[in-house]
Length: 158
Image 1 (tube, helix red, strand yellow):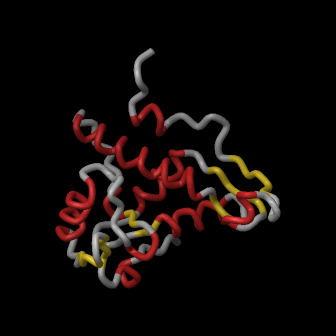
Image 2: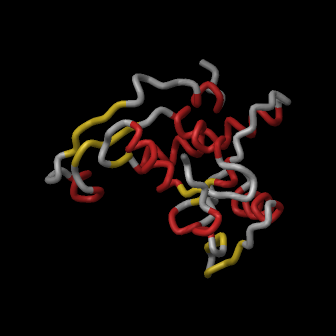
Image 3: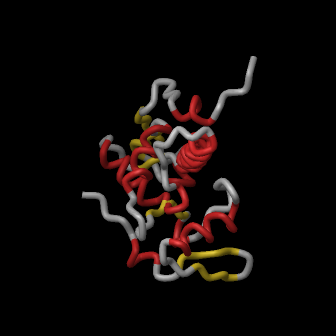
């Protein structure tokens, strides 16, 4: 069987979104807190990422918060969020290479505290290049890179 493309993965929801209760006393509850946890569909991450205009940024935590609120959940699964943001980014690159348009400006999605994400297409170097083209200043702190003053550039969804 052929390997699925990122766009096939992006458009496959497998019964998502879904909200599951996580017991506070469980292993996951101890780590992330208990309550109603959302597992959003990959396309939902892509939809939010597409809304971020040039010159603005968003963090994965912000996206997760919006999606949790949208679905009436207490929080969103961090693990699937990271995977699905990566799928959305790679699907955008696939579409670009095929000349299909429908861009997702994935480079505007940062990790917690404004950190660049080495797992996005092209790694830190590509994300840094694209962010600096849009006027952001990227600074290094040890081996990690951050958008300086990212809080001021945060996209606020209406």
